[in-house]
Length: 239
Image (tube, rainbow, N blue to C red; front, side, top):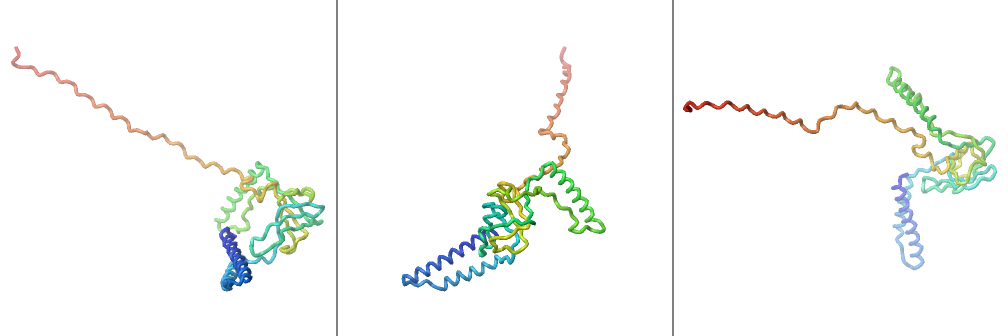
């Protein structure tokens, strides 16, 4: 959903609400508000809804931890990306015997460098195979290394204010309480995967061999030699 669409939807909803309020106030004072205008706004809202298809099922939710009590984690849940759908603002996530809780931690940069170097070699081999007589299937291409490692933790290790995502084995679209199959705790202070975290620096481009510097000025021309003075011509009338 783009910001432009959200702005349009918000404006349409505000206009519709304003029209309905005006209709109510106008009816109380004896004035008449054109019903056609309200119908027009309602039609525009219905038309805008087509750009936001309804999600029939939801099995993953995320939000910020509000409290942790025993095996129950309460979160301020993220809203629906569809402005016409109202999801629960608060959800209670139950930790069962089969619930796996993991925390993301940044991977050691040196380990990531090694994994990334190995990944590049795998890419080269897969690329060579793709140009051969029997091209490699897309599924045979290697998977890039992860920026984080996952460490298993307990519910008591989850702190208030942490951002988590929870998966369920059932549809939890409108559920205010459910049992999670997996809970992922993101690093403290992170709203998602930090941009560029653990990514090795790009290798410096190979430099071209240095060439001899070009002269900035043209060489001075050689001096023109001055012709030698000729011997004086004798005067035949001289005694």
